[in-house]
Length: 238
Ligand SMILES: [Zn+2]
Image (cartoon, rainbow, N blue to C red; front, side, top):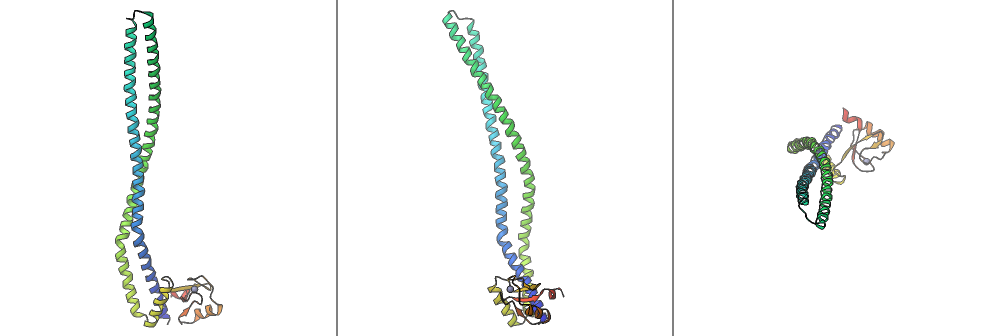
């Protein structure tokens, strides 16, 4: 019977392995989607920042043009000042000069402000681009790792299935059937070890007398609480 229990322990190991493979098979594609989204979001942020910089440069060019026009108009007005004949005209023109100078000075303030903003955005963009480059390497590496894991799933499953079919031939039919029923009812876990008197399936203590017996006897025993097949932790190390 001890042989049978050892085979059951191996069978459980392979079955648990298959379960893990199934979970991996389901989760890996989601992991890829998550990675792609994260990377695209970062890329989009850099792109948006670049667009903001372009827009600010456009505003800057526009303001410079408008300042140039303002300076020209001021120059023309000042030239005309020499040709005026009446006092009234002279005062009107002085007023015009004052207004244009004020407008030009406002434009200059705006230019300074825009240039500061351009500096800030340019610095921020550079940092973000550097971050993106670092992240790109990490992203590509992780993407490759997941791809490799996905590629190896089929061969891993095949190895497990071969082990299972090999073991199931060696295990007594009745015991195998019992194993399958318990596995079905106990969420894929039918064989568990007992360590320090506690079942590793349900984590309850088994009665001391039973624990003693488990260490000596080679019979198939079940946990009185969760009904899983139990074995004494030490026997799997033989
Ligand atoms: Zn139990």
